[in-house]
Length: 295
Ligand code: MN
Image (cartoon, rainbow, N blue to C red; front, side, top):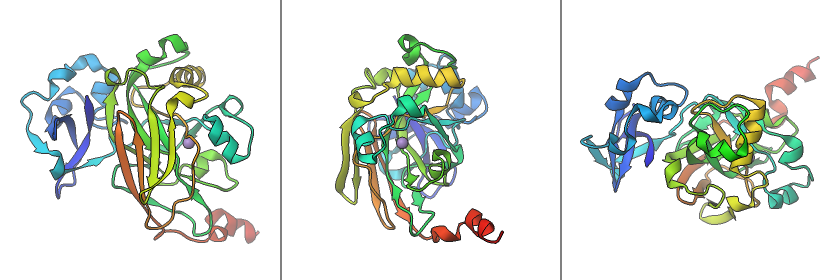
């Protein structure tokens, strides 16, 4: 199933939808009856307990809208946590000029407040620091995972989506460079795990203004999905609705004001966002630097 959060034309409120052909079935009321929205949004009760409702019949009888008349928000507006996999493709490691891989780096956290949805706008923070796109497969956790061996890892996955890990190239820690508001577009929807027989065999592609920049496959990940879950769950407890960004292949490059970025993950779909510099300022004028200079 393809599930997500959408807005009706002209509407503000996010509603829960299941894609049925070229329509979306509005299951908002049915989800709200199950329990409160949590970190994963309206879908939280289902992600936490897929047995709480029969997903296959969830859309039966629900009101439908043509896909052409709605817009998607992020299916996970503010995940409990987002773990990132740095340097998880060898060709990307090579282009970055640092020999370390995920084996040396481990994983990192990015702020859940950085999430935006499809058709959102990435706000560049600085006028004079390179800001890059990273197209990635994202794993949505469905069952609490702690010290899970890789042989059981996929039992803990609810589904998959696409993610852009936007990053500034400067000296700060990854958690700063990747956590600016709007730096983690997620979507356009979640595809449930039953429809992805092998997450380690999915094409990952990205275009900027129609020019292809990234084209690879998750088959080339250094830590495949099972090993990412095994490793991550040896460090932290993974909860339903948490997200693992699985790393980006080669071809990362800068985005600038006015760009249109399209991230595609095979079997999932296309996540499209815009880029703006309307809030950008010179790096030297950033708050921390100004304070240090006055000491
Ligand atoms: Mn990344």
